[in-house]
Length: 352
Image (cartoon, rainbow, N blue to C red; front, side):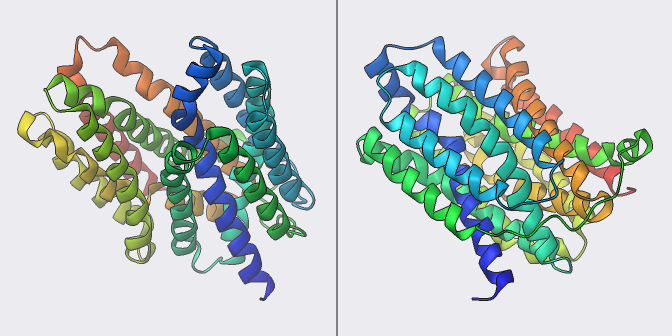
């Protein structure tokens, strides 16, 4: 196996486990509540994980060397899963979430950045392909952690993280740098960063609120859950299926896909068509990988950190804004507004 193949595969495996990590809390929360009697304590879990993520992203973009930072971060997540799997109290799990969040931030930047550097001519295509592994990990986690005893599932996941650390051993240093950041550079990148934040806001809002909307309309809870799994599967399939087509005109074709997505979002306001919400994932799948490729290619490694900061803001504020709507029937309107703002950001990004 040559070096390019090895580290591309290592990035793919890391992104699979990162998707698994993101989906873990939702999969095991019922078990944690039953065993530890927690509820409000989950706020500490998510806040500490988010703080760790932001610290990790900032750290990753300031370090040129990937070895031993990348394999060490995967090993830290192995230790975090082992600690959570053996935790005698929920405090252990909260502490592990914060430490794991730092490692998550480092790996988010470098697992994507390494692929972009290894494949500069096919950056958009390859980043969309390896990011499909993230979606697969998010789909696998709920199955893995509910069909197995959750503690056993965590210990086995720790072994998976150790295997990923071994694959990433010796990862090459960062090649593409643009020098010192400036306000002018940030201003030029702002449309792309806004598009990423709005994309994550739409994605997270649909994930969080589609079930509430469907059950308000009288659809069964199990149907809502099944459709949500379909949403994540379509998002992953879209990254794979549209990667080559989007690579031919990255930002132009993202704009066209997002424009088409508004038709689905508008249709959701009519109750008989509400279960069609997973179809919007078909149009959104390539956005993250393509945006990362554009930022890395035009501005270098430093500004890719901005993507993850924008994603953190969008993924937090987007779903939170729906809590102030007058009622669940207004949810489709919120989806449409976010979708339209995303479209406007992508239109501006075409000029970057």
